[in-house]
Length: 399
Image: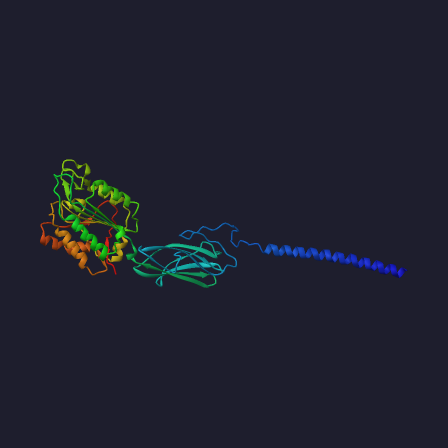
C-alpha cells in the first residue's frame, strides 16, 4: 500500500514537472517567435536614424537605402533604348539600385567622361539621376556608371540621336496682288511667285504641307488673326518662315514701314500692317528660329540693324542658338512688280544640293546676282529686340 502511494506521488511530481517544462518551453517558443517578427521589420541604416528620404542637390532628386534590392537601372527619360531629338541637349533621368552602398556615379557621352555625382551620405543604395546632357549632331551614347563602396560597378547606356531634321518647320506665306481701293495699283506677280516658293519649300525641303499656311489676297484681320493663332501652335523647338509679297510703304516722318493688305486704303492707314505690329508678333512667337522674307517695296524698313550675319560657325552651332533674321528684296526703295529677287531666291533653293543651307548663306548666294540684274540691293540682317541669340534659320533638304 505504501509502495502504491509512492508510485502515485511520483507520477504526480512527474506530471507537474512536465507541465512546468511545457510552459517554459512554450514561453521560449513565443519569445523566439517575437524575435523573428522583430527581425522582419525594415531597419533604417542611415547614420542619423532618420527614416525620411534624403534630398540631394545637383539634380539628384532623392536617395534612399534599399535592403535586398536587385542591382540595376530604371530609365525614366528616355523610356526607350534609342530616341531621336532635334534639341542640342537632353534631360536624362534614371534610378540606380544597388545592394551595396553607392560611392559615386559617373556620366559618359560617347565614351568620354562628362561628370561624376557623389552622394551626400555614405549609406545610399538608391539614387535618382536627373541631369541635362549636351549632345553633338548624330548618335550619342549616354552611359551611367555607378560604383559601390567595395568597387563593384553597375552601368547602363541609351542612345540619343541629335537630328535637326526631326524638328517641325512651319511657313506662313502671304501674297497680295488685288486691292479694294482703286487708288492702290494691283500687281500681277505676287501670288504666282508665292506659289513657286510654296512648291520649292514643300517639295525640296522639310516643310510639310499641313504646316504651311498660304494667305492669298488677305485682309489685315486675316494676317493678324493667323499670327495670333500661331502663338498657340509653334513651340520653342519649332522653326517658322514668314514670306510676304505685295505692296509696301515707308513713312519717312514716322520712320515706320508698312505692308499693305487687300483692304488697305491709300488715304487711311487703319488697315495698313506696320512693321511694329509684325515685330511684336515675332517677339511672342516662341520658336527656335524665325526667318522673315519680304519681297515688297520699302521692305528694308523691317530692320533696326542691317548688319549681316557673317560669323563662320558650324551648322550645329548655328542651329543651337536662337535666331530672328530677315531677308528683303531691297532697302527703302521701290521694287518692280516682276521680282528679280524672288527669281534668284527660288533658283538658289532649287539648285542647292547641300543637306543644310543657313539663310545667311542663301542670301550671300543671291545678293550679287540680284544687284547685277536689278536696281535694288537685297538686305539681310538681325531683327533687333525680338530674341535673336546669334544663330540662323537653316533650310534642310529632304533625303
